[in-house]
Image (cartoon, rainbow, N blue to C red; front, side, top):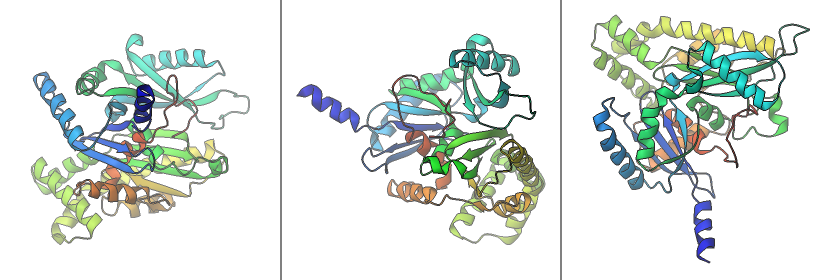
Length: 374
């Protein structure tokens, strides 16, 4: 009887999704019966000083308990800056041979020692460029273990038990793919653009399967620097001005017109460059996937509310741009965050943590080789 009760309790404990983001650590846990958010919390990134590690781990453990999280199992989203992404073509081979081939490819391409690299690959199903080319296209994900030891140890010291590790932007893609898992959804093509503090990731989705992935070094921090330089402000003040603009955009608040205009002009050139990069990727996908046209671009991430960017992106790509999917995933996240007392954050910044918490857990080694965002 005692053993049965224990198993029943564990079955109701869903894993915690932990997004180690560019600007903060965000955590979400779902209710196992309803899949609604039952706990959410945000923490500052740890200081680089190793002397603070033990203190930070203790604070994280206490905060998780106070916020209503249960259990220790978690799915972790690796920081964007530590994840290398590149599409490659490989001959058809067994899974074991493919894993070894990807490891050597990543080691050479990203200059990571072979014994320090962790890899995974997503078969995209993209068309080969030549008629006689029967190689398969794989999106290669590579992680340098030397860069993750410090924060992974920090999370484990807080009492957490990682079940798997994946790029945070895969969690974003999953969050917007939970309702596109049916076989008939395979023909639905959407693009998720995760616009965050230190970079942007484009994910081309066919149903819930990743067909293409590309990262760009344009993020909110670069926009902060451009605003600082253009308006002659210190970086802290420029970042605060941009945060005010984003919040004003989401809540229809008014702010000084001259400040709004000056900040918009300061970042316009950078945003235009990002739009051009996105348009170039979409042209590549149109060829690789035989002209399949995305039905929409879902703009996600902390910087998704940047004023006028939706209009710029729609004009530059000719594809409708939205801040939420048809199931109002971001809106539901926002409602849950408000219930948990989190009101000052854009709900879209939490889509990675939500997607990580939604990851189906299977027996054996977790893998993305099927290409599914879910």
